[in-house]
Amino acid sequence: MKALVKTQKGKGFLEIQDKPVPDPGEGEVLLKVAACGICGTDVHIRDDEFPYWPPVIIGHEFSGTISQLGPNVDRFKVGDRVVGEPHTKACGHCYLCRTGNIQICPEKRSPGWGIDGAMTEYLVMPEKLLHTIPDAIDDITAAVIEPTANAVHDVLERATIEPGDLAVVIGPGPIGLLAAMAARAGGARDVIVIGADVDKPLRLPKARELGFYAVNVQKDKPLELVQKLSGGIGADIVIECSGSTAGIASTVELARKKGRICAIGLPDNRPLMFPYSQAAFKVLDVFFCLSTSYTSWDKSIHLVASGQLPAGKVVTHRVPLLEWERAFELIDTRAALKVVLIP
Image (cartoon, rainbow, N blue to C red; front, side, top):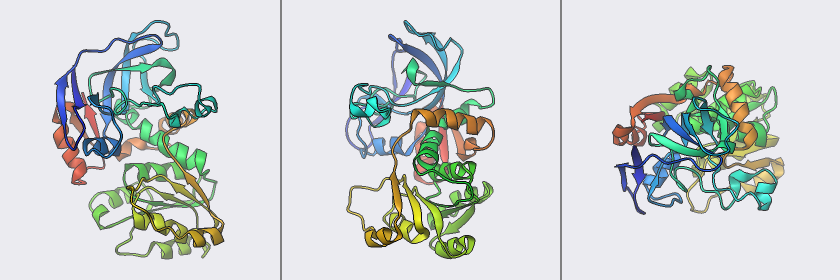
C-alpha cells in the first residue's frame, strides 16, 4: 500500500513509500481508509515542531470502512463505516486513564505521530476506540469528525456554552470555525470570529458564509462590536484558537466580568505577556483544552448528522494522496482552509 511517511527527524523528510498492509491483532480491526484530513499537527511534524517517532505514517483525522476483523472483535462487522479516537497506547492504569481521561495519558501514542497513521490505504485501529458513522454523514465530512470532536469537547464540555451567550472566536482557521459552529450549536445567540489581513481572501469570507460576524483586527476594533452586541458588558465566552501572542492577550479585554476564556490555540514555547491582574479583577474562568473525550465523539456525530454543526463546510479541497506536496502547499499558502487526502 502507498503511505506518506515521516522518515527521520528534521525538517522535511516526508515521502510516499510502499508499505505492507498491516494485520489486525487482538481486539483490532483493519480499516480501508476513505479520507484523511491534514491537521496543523501534520504540518508541525513535517517541520520538526511536534513530538513524533519516525519512521511513521502521518495522519490522524480519518474515516474508513472495516475490511477485516481481528480476534475477539464483537462490536463491529466488516463493511461498517467508522471514525476513531486517536488515543492508542494509553496505559489504562494511571490516574488519568482511571478517571476517564485517556486522551492525556502520558503513555498515549496516537496514530500519525506515535504509531502509523491514516495517510495511507489501510489502518489498524483498536475496536474500543471506534464510532459508527451514519449514512447522513459522507466520508469526507466524517474525516473532520476528529477536529469537530476537539471543538465540541473544548467549547461545549469544558467551557460550557450556555443558551444566549455572546461568543467570540479568535482565529478563523478550521478549528476556529468548528469552535464557532459548536458555540452556535450549544445555544450562543451571536458568534464573532476575529481574524487578520492574512485571513481576508478565504477565512473571514468563510466565517461570514457560515453566518458569523467576521472582524479583521487590523482594520476594525472587535471590542466595539462586542460592546455593541453585549450592551457594554462584554463577551460571555472568548475562544482563543490562534495561538498568537496578541490573540491570547486580547481575550481578557473582550470577556465580561465573570466571563470564560476557552484556550485552544497552542503558541510556541516563547514566554507570553498575559494581563493577569485584569483577568483577576474580572474574575475570569480559564479553561485549557487538549484532544477529545469519549463523549465528545458521539455528540459531534449527532450534531453533524442532524445538520446542527455543518463541519464538512470547512473542507475546501480534496486531493489524491499521491499529490500530497500540492496539498501541503495549499495549506502553507493559505489557499485552502481544510484539505482532505484521498488514498
